[in-house]
Image (cartoon, rainbow, N blue to C red; front, side, top):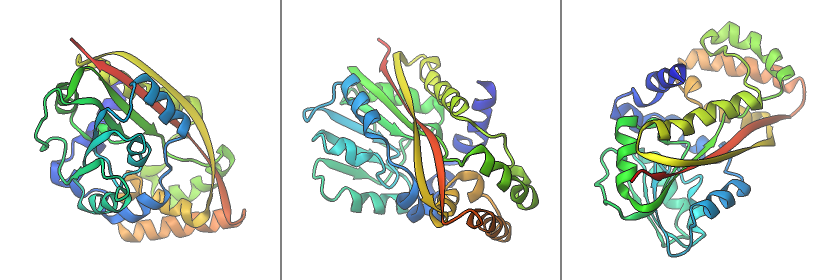
Length: 276
């Protein structure tokens, strides 16, 4: 757990607010186009656990370009969605245009004016790890009604089979050895996500944690996969020449095997209630 917390501090909430606000801007369009949506089975489970209905009110923290938002807006619930990145905010406006029950605010959760005990659920879809925990958990708990729920959704990074991973490894070693990390099978991905959920309990602000996960298999074109990689933080940090060389090398290896690539990832949810 300590390693995970240190990684989050180094790569996510440890950055200053302005860095975080514009972090995904270079890849905003690609993020919206190729990041996977959340499986309906996950949406259905959290909707049931949190007892969401058209009468519910939701606060979404860091909605991004509205990857998860439409699935909850379709329930008919009132939604207030905060997103600090201006490019994501613009995309979210377009995505949520069919939903008059969604209010978008272009600000960070840290800057958002707290509406105390106003929401039945606080939703964060692959975003809560970007907020300092000493801010995020207490503020989320304060925004919830006593019988409300914190809903955390996660899609782990999409990855190819271990065989393809081994074939791509030399390209990473040549161009970006810092990205040469250990392969994560589905059990490892699920364990990491479970640790993220447990952090809500460790904050002292939440209790009664429920969770689950499923393994998802998808097929991307080579172009889509390279677009996807460009949205992940480690690749966003690469220098332009380094990124160009890496992606050209990855493309050569991948296209030797065809125009598409099979990928898998773990999608998970955690639902918890405020203490007291």
